[in-house]
Image (cartoon, rainbow, N blue to C red; front, top):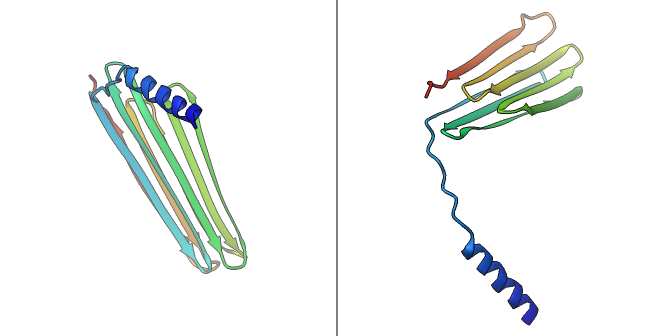
Length: 148
């Protein structure tokens, strides 16, 4: 028990001696997000994406998220999300969700991106029942951050 008290005391002393890190205020900041869902027959699909950026004197900090789901009574459903963050401050995310039951289907796709100065998000949905006209919808949002 004395050993545990020593570890606890050492951890508290280390935290108390740490220098404080202060958050910088954003010179420019923005967020975007789109989402949508489609349904037809016994199928449904939804997707959503969001991104945010805070630009400071020290550079830009960004975040991104995306997700989706699909469901069907008797057919097949799938949802895939891919996030790419290998290009420095450029982030990209894409989600595809689709449900198919014989000829009836519903699908939703969301693409979201940020590069530190512009944020974009687009969601496209579509549902279709054989013999009927497809139902389509597109939602777009784009923000360009002001120069410093």
